[in-house]
Amino acid sequence: MNPVYGKVFLVVCCTLLVSVAGAPNACGKMDLKTDPFTCCTIPKLLDVSIVSSCFEKFPIDKDAADKGTGGIPKTECMSECILNSTGIYNNRGDLDEKKLNSVFTDSLPRDSPWLSVVRKAIKECSAKATKKDKEFVKAVADQKKSAGKGATVCNPEASFLVDCIHTTVFSECPLNLRTTTTECDAIWKFLKNCPFSALRQ
Ligand SMILES: *[C@@H]1O[C@H](CO)[C@@H](O)[C@H](O)[C@H]1NC(C)=O
Image 1 (cartoon, helix red, strand yellow):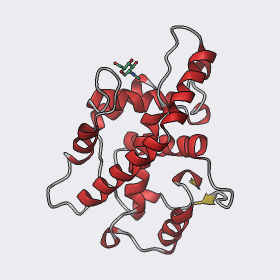
Image 2 (cartoon, protein in one colour):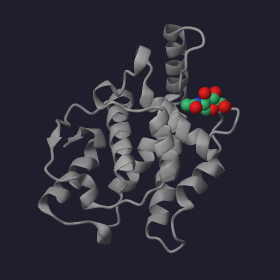
Image 3 (tube, rainbow, N blue to C red):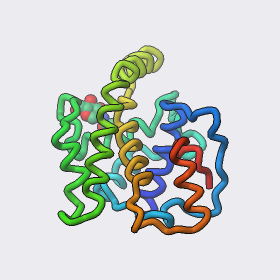
Image 4 (tube, rainbow, N blue to C red):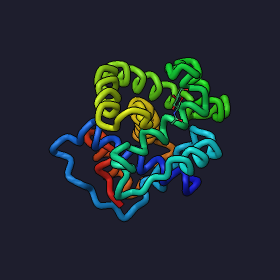
């Protein structure tokens, strides 16, 4: 995996799952000696040059990941930047479901075993995002209130989707593409009940 892409995914997913979804209490941190991506190499679902340019515009500092400058969560703006640049958000900022499907699957070969995995992940994650819509609207309103006029406020929905799709795809890695080591097996067992964010390297 491209280092920037891998790093972005890990940071986005880790900060987001904790801040938005909240890890179930039973999920203590799991200390890893293994890079989860060696257990399953998920395909790059997003254009690396787009991810890199959004990462440059909204750099993520792991320690300050969900604070940003002036209390604006930068991961949210980075993800929004990705969805804007790919056209998943149209120029009015509305989610284009068709585009969401095509952007995340276009780079995959037609006979790719990942195609059905990615389509299913998009479906599940869109449904989850729809359920959380009120929560996202409220988060944006709260941020606007506290950040003041003219401040950049980004929709947490973008990070939720990017993260949810990648995490779901990783969790559903086809059996024949998994590396079966004791630690990798432990990771999948862990992910059945716990979020990716509880994995720590
Ligand atoms: C994404 O596009 C919307 C609508 O054009 C814009 O208001 C917003 O600032 C953009 N977000 C980022 C992070 O560039």
